[in-house]
Image 1: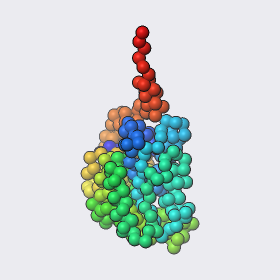
Image 2 (image 1 turned 90 degrees about the vertical axis):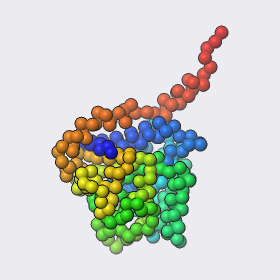
Image 3 (image 1 turned 90 degrees about the horizontal axis):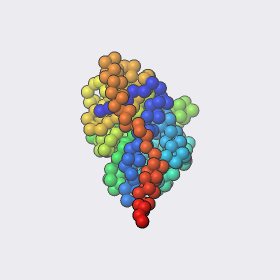
Image 4 (image 1 turned 135 degrees about the horizontal axis):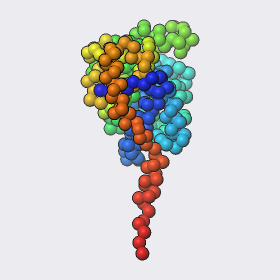
Length: 289
């Protein structure tokens, strides 16, 4: 497990975006080999998405051969509702990059048979070859996706009733009115995310500090579902200084001492421009008399 500690939210967002960029480029995706990326919604990943959009517009990164799978969606909220996760992803990310719409996968919270929709989502992930990198965020109570406290740590994509803490936290997106907040959602399970070859969790802000403490310093506990990723062979937690307020000083010092090593994951920062240059040079015939 890696814990990346940056001073501010913007730095944490940029580090995460650089990591995703390098992973995609090093994977060398193409028509016969797509990079599969799991994605979250919420305020935490917005800074990361902005940097990825910037890389794409600068020609340093392409999502042409990337398939995405989102973590969750509200039940009963129209797809074009401004607070649906379909709207969120299109407005904040997808419409600004070169991804093909058919390669984006978001659960349908208005499906006639919700469990069948969840089962089909699992099959789509499997058909895509599994998730290469699943990016996630957490709630103040340590839930990953909508796997609320008490969720099974081997759960799969399913219908979930939202906890009151989650409804209260999301009320700010619905004019502060609790009655407007959906009470159910479709969500990938903890086990679904655990199946990914790599997981990156973004945790920022002092209000997430206790959840980070539970995820890092205490044992695996279904009341803090993010703690399950202690047992994943390749987990990267990316946080800002505020999120470390509940951690022991020696824990913070230990992981900060590893930053010289961990920063090698994003430095050098690769670009598809370099890849294209390498291809064009290798395709040139060597000089001969």
